[in-house]
Image (tube, rainbow, N blue to C red; front, top):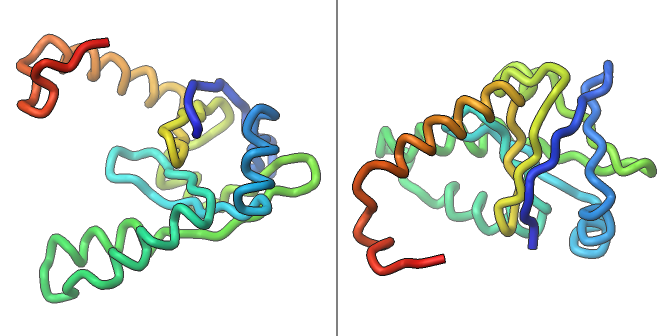
Length: 148
């Protein structure tokens, strides 16, 4: 569904203009209703609301007595915010989420199939460098025999 990378700018109020190539899909799939939440890698995840709801429900069913499950619930569900695209295709990113992901002005929106990742541009560049280093290490077993 969503793929590709787009370099974008947040405006002075913390609004992000969703690229035009995604707007129609988001309007038809979820009427522009999105969920933003924190990701453990230091970026934000941007889900169409129908994609987020089953994830939220699964997270909420995890045992609150398991410290790792509870930490995951706190991160993902605890930071989740519902937003709606305005008439210009923009969404407002709250100060809390902007602070969490260190989003200032220049950001990268990365399509990840059913969701997007939203990165500070400098952090995205560092992430890409780290990914290149990982490519030189041994591949996980599930990628053996995988080819492009």
